[in-house]
Length: 239
Image (tube, rainbow, N blue to C red; front, top):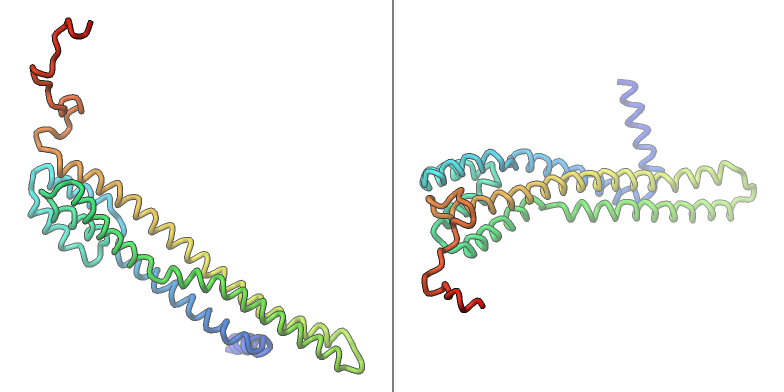
């Protein structure tokens, strides 16, 4: 308890010595931690795996069992972002390929936007925190030089106390910025990876959905229409 109390007193002392600019830094720190925790919980709750969904949906498509695929994906839409996008694909079965792609693109954009909520705030906090810390440092240095100019007997303690107070805001600002930037980089990597996987999965499933069952897995040359007799020129026309 004594150790905990001394630590709390030390932090309180640093906060008081930092001056007025410690208040916005306190707000920035609370906002950064709150946003980072909220995004981490959100991304963990909404499972971003896509590979298992792709395997199951492909099995349904290979047997032309679209109702089962819809039922399977509908039951997962609450916690699986990928299931929402793939359900859009299944619901557009029978539409032209370009219409399916547009519907998937719109749904994917909506889902990715929900995943990236708060990312801009982390970027802003990562930029504002060190700037606010530097502003506090400049303000502290101004106060230190003012104390020097007003003192009749200048000593090292007057200068040291002013610089010490000035650098506190810089340290706090840099720590907050570091947390915000690390969180933003990690979350961005997770969302980008999910985006790439969804794009590849949807591309494969669109081919599976729009290709006639009897032609699936056949070489491309067997899918091309055979030339009619009228399209074959006589031999003498080539000479």
